[in-house]
Amino acid sequence: MTFTDGLAPLSIEPTCRIEFGPGRVDRLPGLVASTGHTRAFVVTDRGLRAAGVVERVLKLLDADGIEYAVYDEVAPNPSTGNVDAGAARARAFGPSAVVALGGGSVLDAAKGIALLVGNPDAVAADADSLWEAADGLPLVAIPTTAGTGAETNGFGVIEDTAACRKVYIGHPSVKPRVALLDPELTVGLPAPATAATGIDALVHGIESLASRGANPVSVAYATQAVTMVSGALPAAYRDGSDLDVRAALMMGAHLAGQALTLSGLGLVHGIGHALTAHTGTPHGVALAAVLEEVMEFSAPAARDAYEQAARAMRLAPPADGDWARAAVEGVREISGAVDVKRPLRDLGADRAMLRSIAAGAVADAVTKNAPRLPSESDVLEILRRTH
Ligand SMILES: NC(=O)c1ccc[n+]([C@@H]2O[C@H](COP(=O)([O-])OP(=O)(O)OC[C@H]3O[C@@H](n4cnc5c(N)ncnc54)[C@H](O)[C@@H]3O)[C@@H](O)[C@H]2O)c1
Image 1 (cartoon, rainbow, N blue to C red):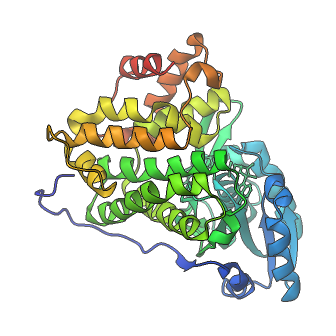
Image 2 (cartoon, rainbow, N blue to C red):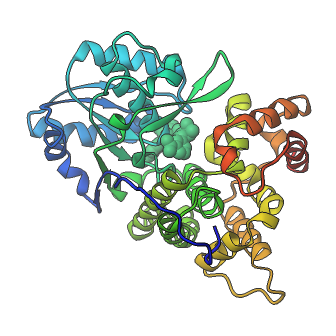
């Protein structure tokens, strides 16, 4: 979007209620009650058990006498089978609020689980038709990574292992009622995961600015997101115990989620999804592998957006006036500072796989919002450069 365009009419639904701040997780019992339920089905994963985060939250529910069941078997990049297994447990537990406690994998799986409980005959592989289905259970989202922004929307990105592709499972009813953003819960996130999830948030801000779906509201969110994430991510990577930078990173990631939910994303995510489906690479690492190269490819169609991103990153004005190049260099510096970029060959993508990854990237729904629409051979060229 350029800033001299006439304004198109807009209709924007407010997203969820936000509860933000260190220690805010203490409000969980009241927030469960605000959904109209007295019981909670907690969706989480083993890593959060090991980190002690699950125990902290269950103690809060115990203290308030809220009956709960826990499904802690969500895998990174959850599969349709993973969601079906969680839904079977939730159906057996019965009516409740769903509490999604974890990173994007848990939040996405929890949305699928909540939706399947409202649709007893459905399975996760029915994702395409579930958009028109009956309502799911209400959801309270507690993100424990500062990355995906998945608490801002009603869809999950789930892997259909049989088809070797990502599918989108969702419904307006499973958009979280509340985003409970407590930076204390992210203090134990190891540095490599801080880097990967933080780069995801940075990409959300940048792709949102450059998206064909950008509008003045998404640009406002994305600009502030890029400022907060670019400022806080290297510091959080260096010292994860600094609660101030953890808080800034968490708010920045949330704002980036608000932005992407309004605007859509682009080719970095198209390639990232396909790369993860083929190799199992963690989401943020897959994005980092191609970020600068996709920006260079997109720059001719995204000059204004990249200038906005560069200024949001507080970069010095470039001597040659080329703000797009400055934005790419700014991103390269952050990615280097958090040591997250790897060649594709180190991520398990052999040369024979590249054509299939390129085809998957072009077919992915997110790619349609890219400022410069790529052909398969364009993507293949980007993949070869980063191999
Ligand atoms: N719905 C959306 O809008 C959206 C947007 C972007 C990405 N996604 C999806 O999100 C998923 C990636 O999520 P992610 O990057 O947050 O990673 P993740 O949820 O897969 O978590 C990665 C690892 O970090 C651990 N972890 C999480 N929080 C922790 C903490 N506080 N302390 C210690 N360990 C912790 C987890 O146990 C897990 O092992 C992908 O499946 C991606 O497709 C969804």
